[in-house]
Amino acid sequence: MNSLALISCLILCFSVFTDASYKYNYDYTSPPPPPPKKSGYPKHPPKKSTFGIGFYSKSCPQAEGIIKKAVFKAVLMNPGIAAGIIRMHFHDCFIRGCDGSVLLDSIPGKETAEKDSPINNPSLRGFGVIDEAKVLLEKVCPHTVSCADILAYAARDSAFFVGGIKYAVPGGRRDGRVSLSSEVIQNLPPPFFDAKQLEDNFKAKGLSLDEMVTLSGAHSIGVSHCSSFSNRLYGFNTTHPQDPSLDPRYASYLKHKCPRPMSDTQNDPIVNLDVSSPIYLDNKYYLNLRNHKGLLTSDQTLYQSPLTSKLVLNNIKFRSTWARKFANAMVHMGSIEILTGNKGEIRKNCHFIN
Image (cartoon, rainbow, N blue to C red):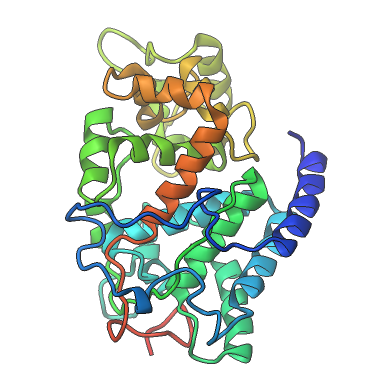
């Protein structure tokens, strides 16, 4: 899909999005299922009154609409922002739970914050969208909507505007007060993980193998720096100069985009994660894997590994099923180790604790 077609789709989606209710439709037909009995989701399930769909219906009924408009404006100007916001939500939830800690700025004299970890800086994008929504919300409903909830809603809206995937998001998350860059590398899966390592990483957060493969489909949008996969192109191992699981023509294309690294100071170009439909959230990501055009090791391993290959093939065959699963998995992920009730705070500014 080209940029002009995406813009037309965005305008249509916005009108549908504005007219339709979110009530009980994140899986298109039914209310959210109860949390599975797993230790990682969430560790202390909140009471229904402190976390649920329509959480701001009385305290700030405009909240979701304000956030939606901020996301729409940003995605219309730059479709890549959608990928950045979804990725930011993932990076937030996998560290200390979905508490908005990824939004906090570093404080001089203390350990740097999550956003300044080399894994996040400068690659994370979309902070300005969250800031814009927060400023507007503070004017309409002061000290009411958390930054963690803004990010969760913004990720949902991003998935809709670039993929037509529509679902309701429970609200009631509170904002955390701690953000440590050292915890990022301890929790986020690196691009060289194999399928088993990815399974273990997601399992630690209470997410299933199928949810891991499903959420990996978010790599149908967004970009990656060459440094994250250049080992697949140059000096892969003593037997193969490049990763044999890469399609040869695709490897040549990547080498053109990513010259052999000669020093740590040279530019680190970016490449689309999805070579076929890079600005549209869809299941073509999995087709790329079958065609040996997965960009990262952690992408291609999903097709190469017997542990996950059948899941990949099912996601190729059943696009609507994958979309429903993606919606459900995003809701599940967005509930990891959340703070509710009197825990945490509602920040006035997403960059700083109160």
